[in-house]
Structures are given as C-alpha cells and as structure tokens.
Length: 110
Image (cartoon, rainbow, N blue to C red; front, side, top):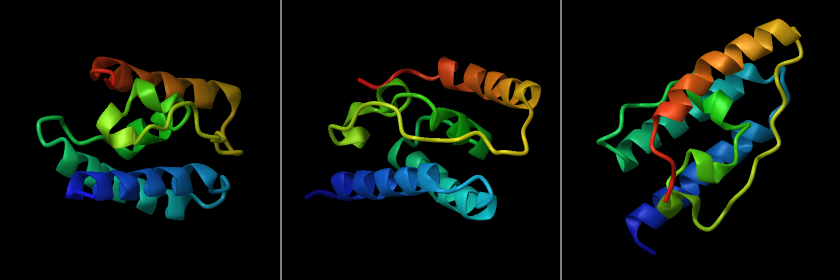
C-alpha cells in the first residue's frame, strides 16, 4: 500500500467518524473535520483548503460528488449525517445553501 492509499484510508476514517457523531458532539466533529481538511489539502495541494463549513455540507452529498476517485477507495454514496438539532429549517437551508456554492465550484471526482 502506498502513502496515498494509506492517507486516503485515514481520510475516509475521519470523514466517516465525523458523520457518525451526534449533533451535540460538535467539538469532536469540528476536530475531525479540521484534520480531514488538512489531510485533503496535503493530498490535493493544487486545490484550496476546504473549510469546516464546506466539509459539513459535503457530508450530506454522495462521496463521488466531492471526493476524487483515488481518495474514495471505491466507496460511493451518501454518509448518514444529521443537521444539528438546534438549527431551524431556515437556518439549516441557509447554512447548506452557503456551503453548496463552494462545493459546486470544485471539480467533481473522477
């Protein structure tokens, strides 16, 4: 296994753990997504770093829409992710809409 495969597996582990956390575990989720952002930037140095807000939004999308195929390790589909309980419908749609623009600007995975 080369270093890209090893780092990709670590990245997927961080993403999955972040998606599985309850809404009240925001600090833990933030830390995992911060690590994922740094690792993504390491693996894709020509792309700008992803923000925590962008990664939170991307957790609700199929992996193939935002993660390069070499980093997905064959995985596809959407992870289970819940919008924080304290968000109202308007807040969550505004939050997701703001982050969607950033995700849509990025090239989709191959």
